[in-house]
Length: 394
Ligand code: MN
View 1 (cartoon, rainbow, N blue to C red):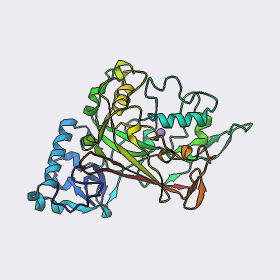
View 2: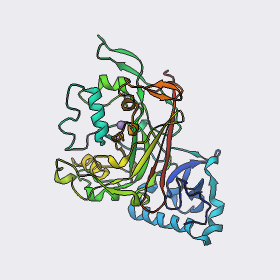
View 3: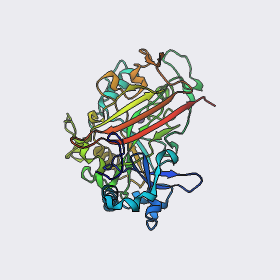
View 4: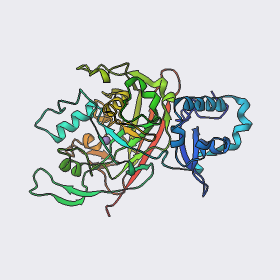
């Protein structure tokens, strides 16, 4: 409950309170919290807290779980108790009047491949004559290290990448703008507390290290990817840009949307076992404004705690600002596929977008992905949205 006038269907109700970095006019960027259609200017409200006067959330993220929880308790009380009205009102700004920036400085970036539906679809499309899932897929959360420096804020234009591609029937590779530019609908996990080199993060310690989540679009050039990815995995087909949403929603805000992870068969090795959960999050993909897909996160095969346990099981440390993404979220149904590669079945079954037959992205196209978490009795917890427009190759 709140004394603020927040519509019941707002993504940013009084139980959510996501954090982000905003700017007004030519003032310096700083930390804010979203509430309804407004931003709480935390830097001005609590000037004694240095971590709020920063142009990234990293200083706040580095404080660790007790500080994250204390901050959440403080914010819940501020928006929930009518007696705080006059103290808080001067620090509320309309979201329409602020510019949202990249919420944190991305340290390392890892991308997983945790949806069985997606991995199966891609396996069928890229390796039609083989088993769709490779033998390791159900034993470990497959992933690769991506390019942190090209993770960009929502709203950043995406220049069509150029590169080498070679279709199966071609004699030799050619160079040029990607003809099969695509999206990947993903959930991104934001690491706050670091771990020590040589140690590993157990499944149980997940919430000690991870602060929250963002909506992520892993832009992908399928023609470049298909030619380059064997044997070392994704490279230039992925590294040109990854977009993330501006508001980081905490794991605490998502607590009520937790659901048990579906049973994994065969059983996983002990370091990946535990009480495993998933989130009941639904994405919506808008291609030039038209809803084309609604991928369900609750059907993901691997849990985020297993992803973090696996990426650190060799003793690799994690740092404040690390970002690891789930991999494309696809459900069992066609209208739940989280990439256009899958939606158009490799371009063979184009879909109708605003009256046109489409398989991949054209210059000028805009894609917006929104997400929200379902909770059993309470309101939806919105994750906001990530958007980007395609510019012609240079
Ligand atoms: Mn991806």
